Length: 268
Length: 221
Image 1 (tube, rainbow over the protein chains, first blue to last red):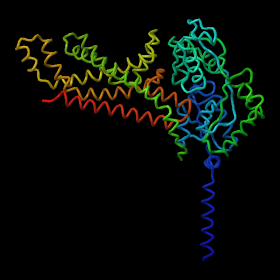
Image 2 (image 1 turned 90 degrees about the horizontal axis):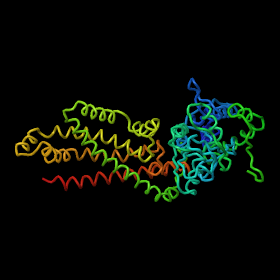
Image 3 (image 1 turned 120 degrees about the vertical axis):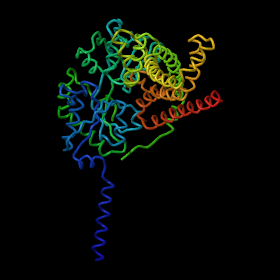
Image 4 (image 1 turned 45 degrees about the vertical axis):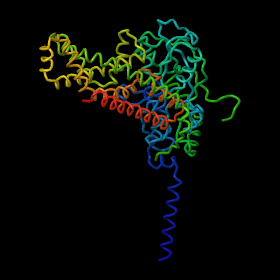
């Protein structure tokens, strides 16, 4: 009798300890579903096809990640400003949302190694005669609120002194405002710029050149303290490149020269 | 479930910036109320006029302003007019959108207030030798404003809260815009938004208390 009680007690203790140790990686594997925050207003990284299904680089990347974890993927549409609330309130497990890995943000969330890299391009309304980044000085410029390029451009406008910076909530609004002439020019990732100009939905705009901002490395993110999961994600990103899947997805959604994800002369 | 450590000092460091934003918010709300009040009185006059055209115009304004979302009205002032080549800055679009909304609601408040003033009052004024405009201006309007005073306060609070919709048209200097920008840069969503909520609450509270004070001063019998 005593022994059984003790055995039960021990078992209960073990169960409790093991539940206490279950981390997010365990939770995902256990639940059988990986919930990814993906921005679906950001072609070619994320958008919806004609039958309203999510498609894009980030969507495929999430599906690959789910496959690697042996679970099914669930794409949770998340606008840029809502990425962190979605993560913190437990609505998503991982952000696959073209998130720039700035140090200021890394104080709040946990960033992986880069999984994609953007170059910045200037897109202008043809009537303004803007031909380069420097021509934007003193003009009305804008970008998608909360993105790497918006933060950099706002700083640049302040440094130039004069002109105006306007952040819009979605990438589509930026190109609409640009096409209408409310904005003279915008800086966006070159992939996004080309994809939007190509749609023909925004007449009178053209990609006119590169913006001399740093390369925008973007990372997957999750809760800062989930080392187990971050560790897995880092290895996953490494494997995507190693197996050629990264190149394959890049060719499928973007095309052209594959951006390098490494920085010379330093360890990560 | 909620894994997040609050770092209030990060948010408090940005407080001066947010308070500057709150000033812009107040500025827009006050301007939009001033414009809204004037337009609402004009709309009320239109409604009382004999002209079917003017009445129709006033009714259409009130109908659209009251039965469509404020977000839509502000968006239309920016991107809707923009597609016709009329370019308003984010500040002006936001102001125009809220003023449009205010005018619609206030005109309806005034109509209700007018209904509460017996016709005999204007007629009494007329029999004392006032012109109809004098009777309206000196006898009806003061009573109308008194009856409509608290609904006007309500609309003022509503105008303050509506300014937060400016972020959809690229507004980045008001309280919501500043908060949004800080959030994007640091990802400290909860601190900044909580702080912004408190500031909005305090502004709205101050406005209602001030209105109550003014009312007790003005409307003593």
